[in-house]
Image 1 (cartoon, rainbow, N blue to C red):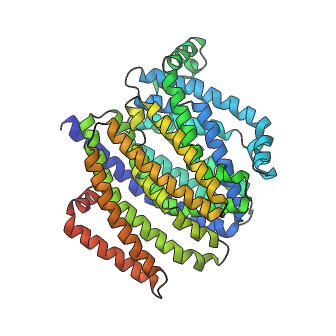
Image 2: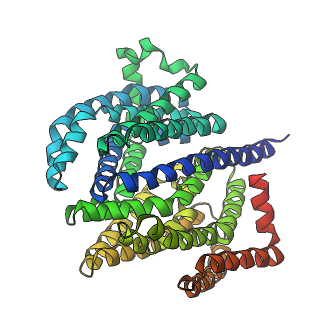
Image 3: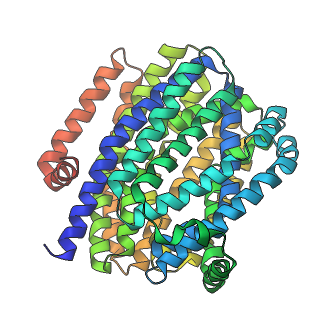
Length: 481
């Protein structure tokens, strides 16, 4: 079998493993989310999301882009892994200590005393997150997609089981926080067991001043790349979660809880799909020829536009009808936010799995510029929309985000020197079809048998897709089966 065939087979098997286990993970996560929506308040969920985003951004400071360096580096990769372990974990320990002293500042910013207590008492989780990124990057480099999928599955099984066992009796948000990050620790332990041995991670080397010199040398050599990547990750995290991180300083925690609930509901299939595909494509892109990368992206884009986004619309349609039935008026605002977020999450399906292209081609400054522009426009959209209400602010954010995601997709194709005309033609054609499908769902939404009509509309769409674009169905079956 040729190298190209092996790579293609590895992509399909990796995506298949991630999708199959991802269905289990997201089903359990969704079940827990629905239970938490009953057990905890809107403010509790808003507090958790704010806490987790702060922890994510602090972890980015600790890692300093070294995970991307490991994945994209073809020479000195073992040394890059060692420098990540030695310096990245070391930085995370320092940051976890500093977080105890700066927690009050975050609490003042987001008007929450509970946030201060959480940050101070659980600062050690920064170290867990840095270790998790190290082990995940090693697994991706080795193309250990099966092991990675299993590690993530054990993570979710653990924290969901612990949450279901404890939270019904102790309905406090801190129980969910601890369970969630202990799940990440379980993932670390699983990967550490299945990835051994890692020669550069010997105990003596990690505490060796000689090897510290090697680590700092590799960081100094690639400092421009690492700084660009770190800035990109920070900007991207803030921009993608601006309704929490930016609006959270202006509105009450309950609104943040409504947004978190809506974004988690609509994000279940999106995150499952983009993470399953993205963590396979990123390391494969780094080891593939340009032509093969373009072919993979074109196939993925065709699947996303023809099946992924319509499925997301059907899913949102169903949620809009089912959520009020389960929870009454408690999460009414979340239903409106569900539909507002469709452009954002739909375009993310096209954009997120190929977001590593600028890193792979060692041009992170392209993405840095894009992130600066994207963050600026999203903040402006939120600020403008907030004058008309929280829901309108989220809608403005979603529309601007969708535009920027499409521009990033085109920028990635430019870096690959692929045909932009073909991409624009496909986007326009599929976009018109998606708009027509959306209008059909809209017309059926307030009918007496809305769920039945919605299912019939989607079934008709799939039948027409099979008749007029059979390649899409064949690509989908090849990945799933």
